Amino acid sequence: MTAGGWFEEAIHAHATQKLEITQVLYSSDTELQKILIFENPTFGRVMTLDGVVQVTEGDEFIYHEMMAHVPILAHGAVRDVLIVGGGDGGLLEEVLKHPVARATMVEIDRGVLDLARRYLPSICKDAFDDPRAELVIADGARHVAETDARYDVVLIDSTDPVGPGEVLFQREFYAGCKRCLKPGGILVTQNGVAFVQGEELTSSWRHFDALFADPAAYAVAVPTYIWGFMALGWASDDPAHRRRPLAAIEERYAAAELDTRYYNPEIHLGAFALPTYMKELMR
Ligand code: SAM
Image (cartoon, rainbow, N blue to C red; front, side, top):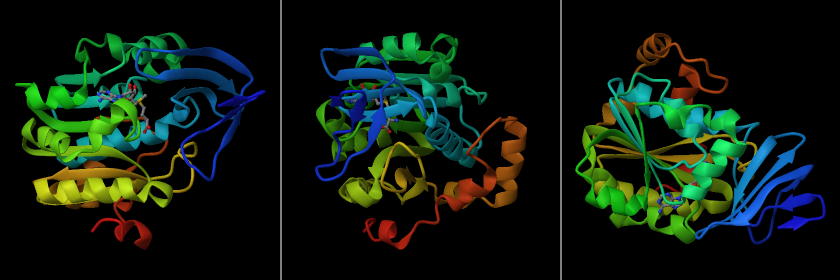
C-alpha cells in the first residue's frame, strides 16, 4: 500500500511497518506479482512484492550473509548450490564469494531478476554475470521434482507462503529438495518472523522432521523483517554439520577470506541457540 509519501506493509492483519517513500523508482505488475521499488532515507532502495518487503540496500547483508555462509562453512566442501527464489541476486552474490563450481538460481519471475539488475545493482553486483551462475526462470517446486542435478546446499530464498511462494512450504517440495541434495547435503529455508508467523516455522519443521535426520532452525535479526527474530529453517541427514566446533568454523572462515558485516564464527554457532518461544514452535 502506498499512502502519500509512505509505504505501509501488508503482511500482518493487525500490525504494520511504514517506510517513507522519497522516490518511487518502479511500480508495476509482472504476470505474477506486484513489484514496487522505492528510495527510503534509512534503508536506501527497497523492493516489495505484493506489498511485502523483500529486500533493502540497507540490511540485505544481514540476511544474505547468514543464509549463505552458515550452511556453506558448516558443510566445508560445497561445490554445487541451488537457490530457489532469490530474484534480487543478493544471496547469489554472497554464495559466489565461495569457490563453488556452480550456483543455480531458479526464480519464477523474470521481472524480479531484470528489475534487480536495473535498480538494485548494489545488491546483486555482477553475480548474474558470473560464469558459475546458472539462471533458470521456472517454478522451484517443479525444478526440485524434475532436475537430474544434485546439490551440496539448497537455499530457499522465497517470498512468504502466499501466491507463487505457497508451494515452497509444502511437504512435496521439501521431499523434492531432499531428492536433489547430495548425501550429507544441507537445506536452508526462509521461514518468516517467528513471533508473528510461528505457524510457518512449525509447519516446515514438521516436514523436515519427517524427511531428515537433523531438523532445526537458526535465528537472524533483520530490521525490515519486523517483529523479532527471523527463522531460517535447517535440515540435513548429517547432524555433525550443525555441531562443528568453533575452531573449525573459525578456520574455514579465515580460509574463505570473507568480508562480512553480520556473519562471524561466533554468531554462526550462536544463531542456533534459540529463545524458548521459538523452540516451542519446533515440535
Ligand atoms: N529475502 C526475501 C524474504 O526473505 O522474504 C525473499 C526475496 S526474493 C525477492 C523472493 C523471490 O521468490 C521472488 O523473486 C519470487 O519471485 C520468488 N518466488 C516465489 N515463488 C517462487 C517459486 N515457486 N519458484 C521460484 N521462485 C519463486
